[in-house]
Each structure stands twice: as C-alpha cells, then as structure tokens.
Amino acid sequence: MNQPSRRDLLRAGAVTSAAVLCPSPASASAAPTDCPPPLGPVRVVPDDPRYADLVRRGNRRFVGTPDEVRVVGSTEQVVSAVQDAVRTGRRVAVRGGGHGFEGFVDDPAVRMVIDLSGLTAVYHDPRRYGFAVEAGATLGEAYRRLFLGWGVTIPGGSCPGVGVGGHVAGGGYGRLSRLHGLAADHLSAIEVVVVDRGGTARAVVATREPTDPHRDLWWAHTGAGGGTFGVVTRYWFRSLPTPPARVVDFTVTWPWAGMDEAGFCRLAGNFGRWCARNSAPDSRGRHLYGELLLFRPQAGGHTLAGQVPHGSRHLLDELVVALGDGVGVTPTVSAQTLPWLAATLHGDDDGKGWRLKVKSAFHRTPLTDRQLRVAYRHLTRADDSLLTGSLSLNTYGGAINAVPPTATAASHRDTSMLLFYLAGWADPAADTAAMAWIREFYRDMYADTGGVPPHGAYINYPDVDLRTDTRAWPALYHGPNYPRLQQVKARWDPRDVFHHDLSVRPPGR
Ligand SMILES: Cc1cc2nc3c(=O)[nH]c(=O)nc-3n(C[C@H](O)[C@H](O)[C@H](O)COP(=O)(O)OP(=O)(O)OC[C@H]3O[C@@H](n4cnc5c(N)ncnc54)[C@H](O)[C@@H]3O)c2cc1C
Image (cartoon, rainbow, N blue to C red; front, side, top):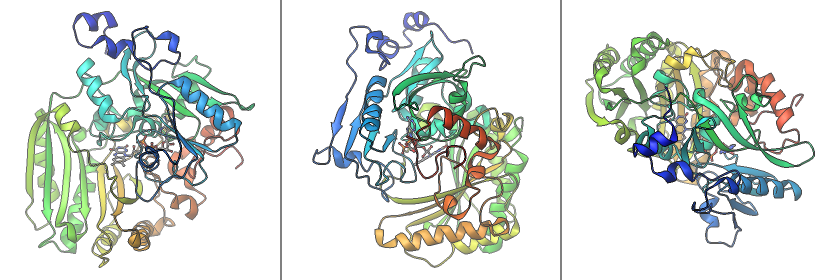
C-alpha cells in the first residue's frame, strides 16, 4: 500500500506528533529538543530492589544470576553496554519481551543482561524504511500503535505480551499469517548492534535492498532466531497489511467424556486432513486460523480456538462439521464477533507463572494412524504430577507457503501444520516427571525418523534436547539455509559474542 506522508498523518490527526517525532533515536542529536530523554541506562546489580524482577521475566524454570542488568532506552546505550561487556570479558545476552522458552538469557554463564524495556517506540519513518518498531516493544504495543495510527498491523503472534525483539528474528506467525505471511516476511530493515573482529561494538543498519552491502545481516534476521548475531535495536516494516475490521473469535470444545481412542484419533486426524487441504497460498481456508488443543483428561475436553474474518464465518461452520466426522461426541461452540483490535489484545495468557517445556514440529501431512495412537496414549498416561500437558495442532501455510525457502531465513515453506508440545507445571518437585513426559511423547511420535520430526522444528519454540539428541539440529531449525547463516555469523559476529545453546555456530564448529 502507499504509505501516507508524515504531514498527511499529522494533518488528518491520525497520529500524535510524539508518535512520529519522538522515537528513541540512534543519535540523540537527531531528536527534536522537546522530546523526553530516553529511559536509562539503568545499571541494576543484585542488591537493587529491581534485580529480582529483571532476572525472572519468563519461564519459571530459569532465573538468571548476572552481575548486572543494564536497562537501556537508546541504541547508543546498547552500543555502550555491549562494549562494556566485551571490554571486561563478560558474557552478554539480550532480553526483549522475556517470552523465550529456554534459558538462553538466564544461562548462569551470562554475566550481563541487556534489557530493552526502555526501547519501545513505534512510529512511521517515511524517510527511511517504513514503520519502525523498537525491539523492546511487545507485540500488543506494536499492534495497538500501528493499527490506531495507520490502520495496519504485523501478521505476528497471538500473545500480546510476546516481545518483538525475539519474535520477529525467529519468523513470527499468528492469526493473520495464513493470509499475509510471517512477521519477518514484511521486514524491510533492521538496526543491530554488532561486534567486529577487533572487539569494537557499533550499530549497523541492514536492509533488504538488493544493492545493500549489509543485506546478509537483514536476511539472517528474517527467521534464524534471536541472540545469535547481535542486539537488534529497531525493526522496520514495509507493505504491512490492513487487518479485517471485525473477526469471529471462536472456541469449540469436544468433551473428553464419551470420547474413546477411536473418537480422539478421528478428531485429530480430521484436523490434519483439513489443514492439508487448506495450506496452499490460494486455498479457500487460508482465512481461518485455528489451534486444536488436545489436552489431558484432567482438562475436561479438547478445544479448537482461533479466529476468522467476520465475512468468512462459514469457514468455521464447515470446519466444525469436518472435525466432528466420526468423533461421536457433540461439541459446544462459542463464537463472538469482535472488533479486530479488541480480539487481538484480549487474553494475554503469557504462561509466566509456570515452569514450561515445549517442543515443536512442522508437518506437511496429517498425523499417521500410529502417531494418533501415540498421542492418545501419552495424553491419557496416569501421571498426575503435571498440571498441564497438551499437544496443539496449529494451522500453518497459506501465504507463508508462497515464499521460497531461501528468500528469508525462515525455511519451512511447505507446511500445513505446526505442532506445539507443551508441559506446564508449578512445583519444582515435578520437574523430572514433567520433562520425562514430554520427552517420551515427542520421541515416540517420531520413532520412525530417529526421534526427531522429519520436516523440521520452529526456532521460536526452541528445544535444547534437539541439540543433545542429534547432530542434525541445525537442519531441523534452518533447513537449507544453515550454511549461509554460518557465513553471516562469521562476518558479523566473528568473536561469537552472541551465543546460546541453539544459536548459529561459526563455520566449522
Ligand atoms: C505465551 C507465549 C505465546 C507465544 N505465542 C507465539 C505465537 O503466537 N507465534 C510465534 O511465532 N511465537 C510465539 N511465541 C514464541 C515467541 O515468539 C518466542 O519465544 C520469542 O523468541 C520471544 O521473544 P521475546 O523477545 O519475548 O523473548 P526473550 O526471552 O526476551 O528473547 C528470546 C530470545 O531472543 C533473543 N532476543 C530478544 N530480543 C532480542 C533482540 N532485540 N536482538 C537480538 N536477540 C534478541 C534473546 O536473547 C533470546 O535468545 C510465544 C511464546 C510465549 C511464551
């Protein structure tokens, strides 16, 4: 779409001047003098009352023990923090929204955490690369500002509390992705703080322009995952889509009561068949996004949750009929039409009160009969130590599948479902049982292919077991793009300053 000029927007009253004029500038001198100064830098050490909040922002399985957390509010502050870490030989990690599933930021070896909580501006940047979203913003903040200011959105994840920082670098999919692609498919440029071979930190802008000598750095941030090349301070997006004005938000529940193994297998099998029929870029069903959450019996039932534009409600009705075929249990359907933004921002179930372990798998075809029986067996296992254990089958494909696998770093472009395995519990005493449950479940699902999914896994649902279990983990996460990602790593992070258990390794390692 043609983006309106800043003057048009101000004249139309569509944005406040602050939304346009007061980002956290890369250079303070670029900001008008009436802009408030950026937050930070704030240096938080262990005896500071803020420390406890800053070292446990996500998954309760992990609590960091850094010497300091540096809360930053500008690119210059990030450069300075990274430089300090390199100069003093301390391992550094960056936190965006704190929604990562593994302990990459909270690793005991990390001595400095750069927390981007002060870097949250969202604004239109017509002279540069489109809409700018600073990397400390949450998805919810980005959705609200982009929609109210300009009527557009990023087709990213469905949890408003997720941080833009890690999410976009890992690809980022959500309710509108089958219509408009991944969040990273709309990325036009990034600003990232990198460290050169001599140990000097600096901010670099990399764009998708074919003539940009830094283009490889932009490309690596379109799906390879965060924490691996540098600290992204700002993302720019172009050609952002307009979301539907109203959507039908739905929950369909099939009770466990009365559902036997055959009924369970029909339900999950029917969903996979529907996804396979509706995963092409031009498929009719691409307007619908749904997650079939298969729960353990303690939860009471299985739930299809999702969204469809108001004008495409018939797709939901057809899907409910297709899923129920042969299941033998009548579902309850709850569907309400909501304005898009209200539907998008409601229900921030961020899982932060839980100890979590997740695994993922891309699937091209429906689950096999053997896999359906394995899923039934593990979900009905009599382990009562788990508070929550589920397998979610998520619709994938559509517009995501229209992009060639090497055009961005997100290589999984021939997929119909993304599977999300989740164990969530509260009591540390249940760690061993919970971890064993999800590991055995996953191993048995992919027993025919060495215990790992044949068509890959999603780096934004990272699982360090894949690194332990198999030397093939880079191919699972990055497909054919891994050797090129290693070249980018060698060029932009030659000292391997930014690393974690599943970061891209330098060539030869
Ligand atoms: C409740 C919940 C719901 C989710 N829903 C979805 C969904 O619908 N769709 C989806 O695709 N994913 C979803 N995710 C996964 C999410 O996209 C990833 O966990 C993502 O990496 C989180 O980013 P963050 O900045 O919040 O996390 P963080 O924990 O802050 O960071 C995660 C990783 O990215 C790195 N990182 C963060 N910021 C930067 C930066 N600025 N520069 C470089 N590296 C950085 C960190 O160092 C770390 O390695 C969900 C996660 C949760 C917990």
